[in-house]
Length: 109
Image 1 (cartoon, rainbow, N blue to C red):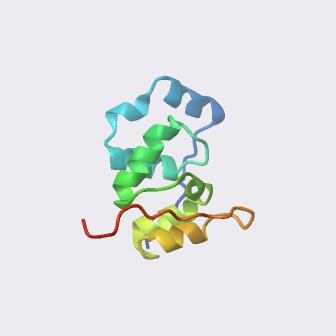
Image 2: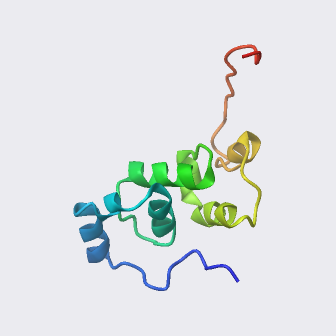
């Protein structure tokens, strides 16, 4: 059985602040950052560092609204759900948000 998303040890508020303030994530690879932060309930690194790590981990751009449902990101990482394409990413938008798609270029290069 795969690891549950949440790690057994959750950082306390104080530990998360110290981890972030001391920039401890900087010694981790991008994917290590992503896995570590996905398994914590408290943000313990710069959001930009977390976002960069998850983008590397999943091999695709990850949009801000997707971080609201970390279980879906974890399931995608574990291969429990398919890699999200643009349609799947847009489907995760809250109901009150209207998406406008702008395609630039003609698709021929």
